[in-house]
Image (tube, rainbow, N blue to C red; front, side):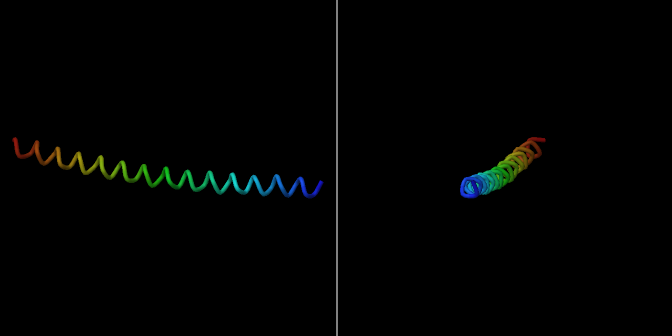
Length: 52
């Protein structure tokens, strides 16, 4: 019974760590994407300002 319980706890911890790392990666990707977007917007704004 105890062995079985420990196994479940172990797997839950592994899942938890996996989910944590995945969410961390997603956060980093989101930051990168928003950075790139803002850079693109800035470049487009510069082009528009030059045309004016």
